[in-house]
Image 1 (cartoon, rainbow, N blue to C red):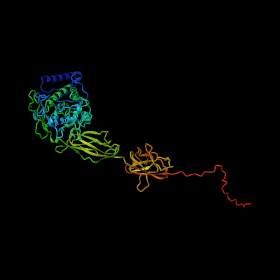
Image 2: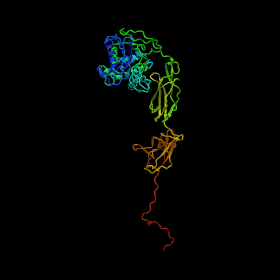
Image 3: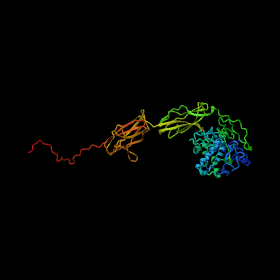
Image 4: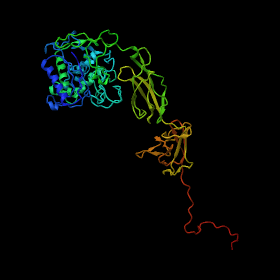
Length: 574
């Protein structure tokens, strides 16, 4: 049967009528076939289905419109066992089927009330990507190459501006539906799952995508055993009555029974072009995995009971010189910077083909990860670029924030399951190699009073102002190895409690720092205050606590004390 992709985003009465007539004709005949859906049915107008209660997971991207073959695997209700033989078109590849069943079990464990059937995932997977292009996935369930829908740039399709900086779809201008379940990046960012437990949420992995689809369909309080809730769920996935009818037809077909086929042997309806092109209308068949030696089986002919017809010559496998084998470090040195500064080293990676040579035009996404405020130029945490003719690409300048510590930067081949290149980076706090008081005033206070003068210091680094440098102030003992003093001058914390060490102090833009007020306890003496900067610069300030000198009090009468012995006059007594 001929297969086309739906282009349901060109709205209008004419296109809607064409779609309705085409689907009606197929439904009336009961025959298998495919139709070109060119308009988006409006359930509000037709009244045939309830309106969706979520935005479309796929961005209403195109889909396969083939209907199930006339012959069903079993009569309704006769068997739930899966035979091991049958047509490639009606069978489900082993890894794909396993992913659907695992998703059903996982969702049942956390949302049993949804009653998600794996057959619904299979129906959507059939319509969205032909069961991951006939099961062309690796041992982990990841497609051999990304499945990308057309560019949603408003030219024949919806206009959806880029939401992931090209991280999933390789396009930093517009979005594209991605993976075997055809999620748009913004939806995947919310609903993406790790279905195979590898620590990643990859829309091109069938286990991840199937679980994400299951959770999306179960959103809210839906019970998919109810027809109305199931219809709402499918319409939330792709808002089109024709889409709903197509999914429903495969859902009913798979509920009657199906069979498992080997990975990579499933049939994919031929499309009008490559899924990587804007005008393709959606995913397209891909050759069997390298080394399989098997061409893609053809679709069933109308009324032939599921038999296959000869297929055109299969697309030749990608040449080794054009196959991405790995991305690697292209000589990036140590990534280290002081807080607030740019990293002197630029991150650079190289894409290699299967022959070990350079591969151009490979999309690479650089991502800053970890507990850090470092970012690429412009404040971006993720940037997607393409390799040049020499296979290399250099990330933008990386800038350190104010937070000191370690973090990582990952370089990943966008949309591929290849291991990323991981770089360790470190941000050190701002430093000073000298610190000194800004004046030489003596710092004194009476016991129990506060010091009248404020301690002010200035920090420098290599003779230049050192702003934002962390400083620690501690009242220390006069021992050979000073420790925090437990008596003498002190600071007060926010609660007014006595403290003799202050941390979290920083120099200002001019490199200076004024300490809070210092108080004296009742013990007189000479004490030491030590200030130490990040970088090891130190200054010790002397603090004196001393009582005032008592002054002589004169006799208020001015009359000499009568008891005082007068000076001898030198005249003898009479």
